[in-house]
Length: 338
Image (tube, rainbow, N blue to C red; front, side, top):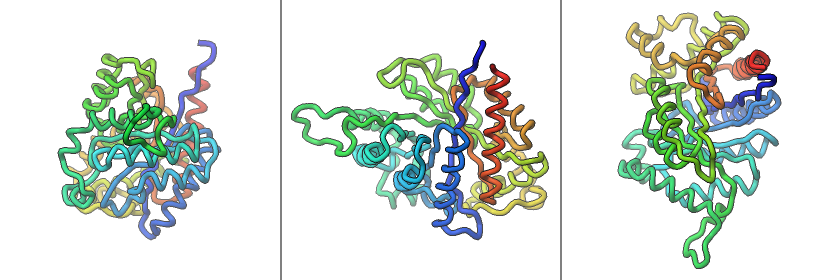
């Protein structure tokens, strides 16, 4: 191969609310990070819908996407994802049709099947578990709202109809892989928190993919956790923020993103640490060389078409630095491939 097409690197921003930070500051941080990674050449910037989570500021996902898209100019901005069971497909089409009208050619709509929340919050959202079972037909309905209106069509998505809004299916299991393949849609796997079925889901997706108007060949995006710093030791220390947050979530008390600790063993049990090592086994934590080696291994194993990185780092400047180091890694991998 004389010249490698550089693999796109992208960002999943879980809009973290660090301890000592307001929601408003967290959302300003998201825009600041988006501008930073746009300058660094990242391809897309996704935000995720979570509810009843004190440490995540992006519950009103389309609103935050609008905030980020308004303050950037070239990077694609979208959802990773919108949890479709929480919404009427028509309203999703209207929201993302509005975004596409404002920021043409830059908006992605990634769709998730999990409600992203607990039963009590689902009731507060006026949604019921049955909505999860309707996911496939809701995706097809949503696709239809983006089509040009038919003559005599009684209900239309205005905005939405005729808009170019690429749909993605997000998954942490094989279900969405099968649906993405059947519908001929790009597929994004959440290996940053659900590593177990990564390889199986990708294999099923590629094997059963049916070309569509949207996509001629399978397209796999793999999302991993990345915590890069100037030394392995510093990166490991910074990564204890996301570890503590995850342990708190597993204990049933989700909270703000805590500052790092020198040793995770001070705040988590052996069993919890074993769980962390399992859950975060695809995470790239370390200096430039360490992160590059880990990412190369993941790319070799998955054959991913695109890599997305989630960096849950308490200090905003350190988080920006992590994405700078990751951009250097991407440059080095591109040179090696060439």
